[in-house]
Amino acid sequence: MNFDGRLLIAFGLATLAQGCALGPEKIQVSPSFELPASLVGSARPVAVAAADTRDRKKLGEVGDPNREMFDVSVEDDPAPAISGSVSQALSRLGYKVEPYSSGDQDPSLTIELQTLKLESDKRAFDFLTTLHAEVLAHARNGNRHFDQKYDITQRMNTAGPAYASDTSKLVNDAVSSALRDMLSDQRLLDTLNN
Picture 1 (tube, rainbow, N blue to C red):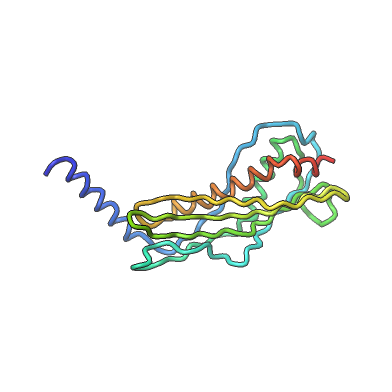
Picture 2: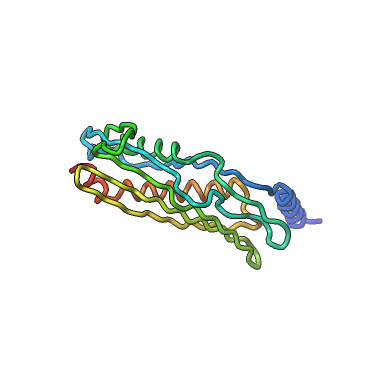
């Protein structure tokens, strides 16, 4: 047997072994993103809060529809991780971040994770896994308000069904991108600053 044949057999066995490892997946949301350091916040205090307002806690299913499908869900409440990531980014932008304690703090930024939806489609030669994330931001400063939804769709092609590492990467990349877009929105920053 030549080298190519052995490589093909090894790949097939690895794929088969992976197929045996499929099961229900619990994803940890831990967004991570970088923004350039800036003094746009001018040490201005801002209260930050986040909430998971999704109707369905299940993201979707992965697996082979001809065999067995498994649920994918978020393991813990993602709100603290989202609030922490946003707070770190706002600090890098020069804001003095404070915990959100009531509805009368100005300026304030509240973030709602509204949608995390996962779809896995078996195609002729691969699987296409798509994740859609929607984040809603509410910025308030006195009588000024700014509300904006940031949505991101990310896709991944894999030889077999998406595994926990694949779906975790999709979830965290999508949420991170939505949060980065939110904190790069000059209209939101203008509301917090004025």
